[in-house]
Each structure stands twice: as structure tokens, then as C-alpha cells.
Amino acid sequence: MILALSIMLAFGIYWIVQRNPSALGLRNFPGGFEQRRFNNPNPQGLNTGANASQTGIQPGFEGRGFGDGGRDFNGRSAPGFGVIGILRNLGVIGLITLAVAGLQKMRAFAFRKHSVKAVS
Amino acid sequence: MSVKTNLWVDTAIFAAFLVAFEPALTGIAVHEWLGLALAAALIAHIVLHWDWVVKVTLQFLRKLFHSSRLNYIVDGILMIAFVVVMLSGILISRSVLSILGIQVAASPAWRFLHSSSADLFLIMVGLHFALHWSWIVNACKRFLINPLRDRLAPRPTLGTLQPVPVPARDEDK
Image (cartoon, rainbow over all chains, first blue to last red; front, side, top):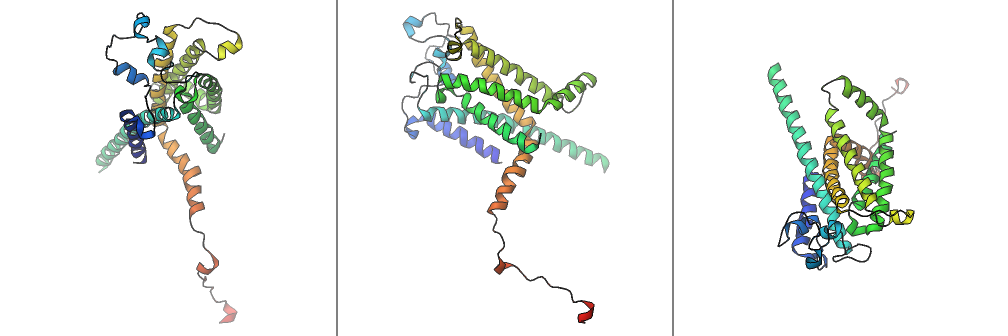
């Protein structure tokens, strides 16, 4: 239960900040993997950098959010966005943990019930 | 190695992993050096659990089905993903290689491999957590929650202590 609530909290904060960056006093969300990949107005599959001179989007990290878009010279964005990224990763790990641990508990419960029936 | 030591080492590794996984927070240079430090920490984690690795490897070859089989497969994929993340990360490194005086032409393929294997690593960490969930919960209860509860619980003072009835001795009767 605590795990489920923590996941909801982590994803909730992540969702709020993605929708409305000013909620954390942040502006110009630079975007991570997902945002660059799915919010691309002209998706053409993997960015090879062939038209980099026209689009300004570099291949590799630069095209996927690891570059200088909205970041300082060290590749670092506003601290709030980094924390939000950590929350997203925690949410992903928590969600997988909850799903698999839940399945294991259900399986254990089913087998226990089955064995009790067999005995009686 | 005691459960308490394992718990603290694993907690530190997890915290370092979360920070190293977010280069937007730390910057590329810290991301690279922290990643290297994480490699050393994970090797320590494996060394701490070496007995388990040897035992399950031997069982894996002997028996077809046993309880640790899924654990072993997940940990194996986790290890492979981590090695790929580290190697590709070193090959696209901006800070580490330049300090070592090595120059490698950064290929987009290595970058793609680095981010893809990092995504796989994140998923496998979730599975690793799930398969060790009962251990995590028990260790946290034993070494974090219960000591905290004992500390926060009000201790009985002299005023609240109830007198214990003393049975009368035979010569008093």
C-alpha cells in the first residue's frame, strides 16, 4: 500500500511538472527521452543527423535530450528538472516492483488456497 | 556479511544509481565519474553476495527448476545491461577519456546503445527489487522502522510505573 501511494505521488509530481513547469517555478522544460521522441511534430524514426543542418537537432544524446537544449555548459538543466527525472525513474522502478511483487503474492495466495482445499 | 551492512551498502548503491542516472541533475562530468564509481560499488555488491552466486550457478547447472532460477536470470541480464552501459558510456565519454588522454570518435551507435541499455537496466532494477521485495521489507522493518519506533515510543517514567505485588514470604505469615 505504501509502495503504491509512493508511486502515485512520484508519477503525480512528474505529471504535474510536465504539464505545468511553472508549478516548481521552472520554465522551458528541456524534455527527456520521451518528450523528444513522442512530441516530435515530424517523427521520422531514429534521428541519424542527416538533416541536422536544417533542423538543428543533432544525432545521439544531443537529439534525445542530453545535449545543450536548455542546459548549461556542463549539460546540466535546472535542478528541479533533475529531481523530477529521479522521481520518474523511482516511479518506473516502483511500478515494476509493485506489479511483479503483487503477481507473486497472488500466485502464493492461489496456491495456498488450492492446497488447503486439497487437504480438506 | 551481516544483513545490516548489506542493507546500508545496497541503499547507498541505489541512491548513487538514481543520481548517476539523471545527467540533467549532475552534469555530464559528474554523471561519468559517478557512473565509474558505481561500477566499483556494484562489484563490491557482487563480492558481498559471492557465496550466493557460486551456489546458484552450481544449482543452475544441476537442477532444471529451483526457486532462485528466475533471480539468477534477472541478475544475469542486469549484469549484462550494466556492462554495456559502462562500456558504451566510456566510449562516448567527454570527461573521463579526455583526462586519460584517450581520443575516440564518438559514434551515434554507441550513444544509442548507451541509452537503450540504460533503459533496460532501469527495468531490470525494478525486477531485481520485486524479486527481493520480502528481504527489503524485512530488513527495513528490522533496522529502520523498529529502532525508530522504539526511539519514538514514550518511555515509562517512575511516576507511571505500577508497583509490582510481592508475594509474602512464609515467615511473614
